[in-house]
Structure formats: C-alpha cells, structure tokens
Amino acid sequence: MEGRVLLLWLLTLFFWGTTPLFEKAALRATDPLVALTWRTGLAAFILLLATFVSGKAPLLASLSLRDYLALALSGLFAGVFGMFTYFSLLKSGEASKVVPLTAAYPLVTALCALLFFQEKLTALRLLGIILTILGLIILERN
Image (cartoon, rainbow, N blue to C red; front, side, top):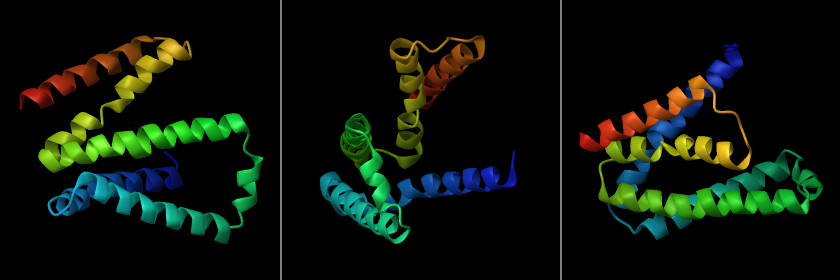
C-alpha cells in the first residue's frame, strides 16, 4: 500500500473510530435531533468555508442536475435519515455494539449494487456478504 494511501486510511480509521465516543458523550445531555443539527451545521459551515478558500467554489457550477440530485439524495439518506437513526441508536445503546452493527451498511451497498447496477457476484464478494451476515449474528448475540 502506498504511503499516502496508508496514512489516509489510518487517519480515516482514527477519525471514524473516535467520533462515536464524542457523539455518545454529547448524546447523554441532549436529543439526537439537536446533536445532529449542531454537528451537521458546523460541518457544513467548515466545508463551505474550505470550498471557497481553496478556490473550488466555481466547480459547484460544473455539476449537472443529475449530479445535484444524486448528491442531494446521498445527503438526505446518509446525512439526515441515516445519521438521525444512528444518533438515536447511539443514545439508547452501547457504542461498542451499535457502531459495528450500523457499520454493516456495505452489505446493503453490495446487495443493491448487484440488483441495480448488475455488478457481478464473485465468489469473494459472496464470501464477504456471508462473513458480514455471520459477524452481525455474532454481534447481536453478544
């Protein structure tokens, strides 16, 4: 693995791995909707600022209507609906159990990609799907 790719992977693991701890701590004192609003609002502000400061704002105009629609649906599904249900689960459950269970979303992605994009079901992909399902069963029984 290339050094830059390895560093980005490790940073992503660190950021995504520690974030639920901050969220769980914050959710002790507030409602999931309030927490999600603050978290997402701050992230949106920083992203807008970074887009303009980096000079990439003109690229926003280069997106097609289809791109805007796909990104809007992504934002709604992952950023609003998914994060709200995740925050609600995190508030009521153990972080060490909720996070791995909700992190099984690649299973849904794989199944939908097979159905809607006619991606091939290889032996390795099938094994990955089976292992993910087995992992969910093990986590749920723990």
